[in-house]
Image (tube, rainbow, N blue to C red; front, side):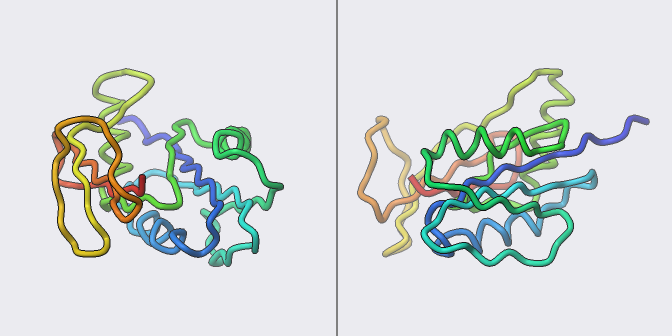
Amino acid sequence: MSTLPKVSAVMPVGKGDTYYPLALACFSSQDYEGELELVVVDNSDEPISVPDDPRIRYFRVERMPVGALRNYGNTQASGEVLINWDEDDWSAPNRISFQVQRLTDTRRALTGFHNICFYNTVDGSTYKPKNSSHPANSWHVLSIFRDCPGTILATM
C-alpha cells in the first residue's frame, strides 16, 4: 500500500479578515488522511490573525500581485502536491482527498473542476451561466465537482 503524498495548500491573502476565516475553516475541515500544510502569504493592510496550528505556516510579505504571492507561497511549500487555496474559497471537506485521488488515478500532473454555477451572497439565488461573462460583485462562483458530491465556492 502506498502512502499518501503531503499536500501544501497555498493561500494568498490580500483582503485581511474579510474572507480568510471561512477559507481557514474549510481547510481545517478537510477529510484528507495524508499530511496537510497551509501556506498563508499575507499582504493585507493589517496582518491577519492565524490560529496556533502546526499545519499552518504564515508569511507576511510586501504588497504584490496575487500571482507573485502564489509563486512565493509555492517556493515556501514543502508538499509533493500543491493546490491553490484562495482566501475567498469555500471548499467541501472532501476537496483535497478528491483532488489527490484524481491525480493518483489519472497519473496526471494537474486536476481541475467543471460545472460553474453562480451564487448571490445578497439574496441567496443561484444560476448557471450560458456564457463566460462575469456578473456583479455580489455574485460568487460555485464550482461543483463533476464526479464528487462536494462543492467549491469561490468569489469572482
